[in-house]
Length: 390
Figure 1: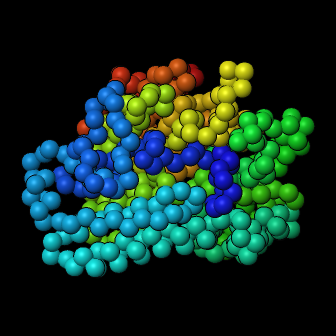
Figure 2: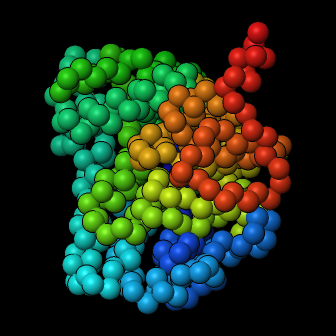
Figure 3: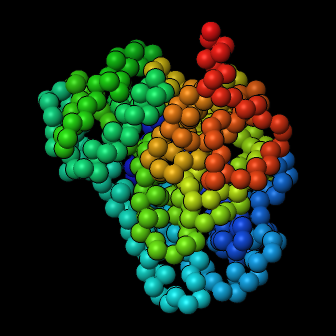
């Protein structure tokens, strides 16, 4: 993807959806909604129904037993800001026996943590670790912090499991696409840059990392938002909380969530579900791009070709690790319905394929319950692909 360059660049990742697209979080058993202000409708509407975006600051809630009691004994604390190129919201249900000032301090600390991760992970600050790593491409091992080393290891793991459908070295293609000007990359320049993209040319060993080829370049834009959301949530001691970083949503407690259909107008949902103690990320092809000669060119690029991935119109992933969830959602937009990386990582995924069909992969476990779909979904497992291959 090619967003505004003001903050953390994300040339390969899906745009993360907040109130305008993707995930709409409502309330289950008194938990707060994701992007809220004022009083909105309760839980996510049934799939297929019109679902206007949750207004910033709204507080949706579910008409379930115990909600009134839960609301009477908790107070909602919301702290907002900006980070990683989009909106940031930290929401805490402050227990009645806790000081509201303490809950607000926890929310402020979570917001600061997301902003810290942004500073750590960006490649736009010349003094930053990623910028230094990129500048030293082809020059051997460079020192990195344990945190950056672990993020790079996570990225490489997802790259290996997806055959390079997710690849942080796609930063070498930065600037070839002009999304705002609706211009495709020059074929000659794309062919020149593509050999610089390749996760096998990135190495992490102990407290060092290096890129084999001069001109190769790393971006953590496809992994840092989910990581930052999960890191921030871990700082919050309250039992019900949510950190939303441009739609990468880390949840503690149970929340009713709606997934917007990527082609429907008026916010119609393709699914509604209850998510508990997990991270949710939705990637889609409809937020940033242009149409040329009847073909949609969107921002989620296949690192192997430099062209938009065609595996799905949208992907929603649940996984307890924010960085893994973030990277996998992007990879599946390129791969399409391949359950093997989903199962290998212990994740769950719901895909809307280019022909509109729904596909569910992975194990719902305790994290995903009460799933309502606008249409029946095909469930695909890795064993099905293995049997077909034989």
